[in-house]
Image (tube, rainbow, N blue to C red; front, side):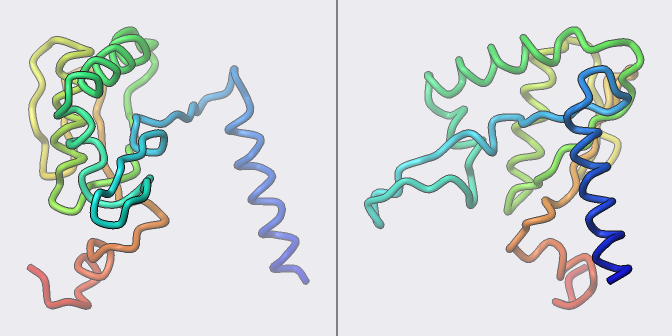
Length: 149
């Protein structure tokens, strides 16, 4: 019972942090969770899986929407903002690469890679982590379960 109480308390504190408009932490989504693509083979819409962002920005409409969205919401971040955590990598780092390009457009400056999953413009640092709902191989690879280098 104590474990369930602690779990409920943690959930409530996270919910409170997300809802607090004047809080220390802020939450949002960079296109990934709000875009679907039509799978011609299965003849149905899908909202997750490989290539969501890179396939979206590859078409003129998607490029326009993503550039306008990132420019509007990421170009003038408060100076207190130092770190952005991005959930998602893409099956071959494609989400990381396309996000990097969108940050370059939204915040023109000298961007540089720190490593395969993080980059900076000297004012903010963006770090990509695997999405907690990941069903790909990234987490087992990192844990050494697949003998991945």
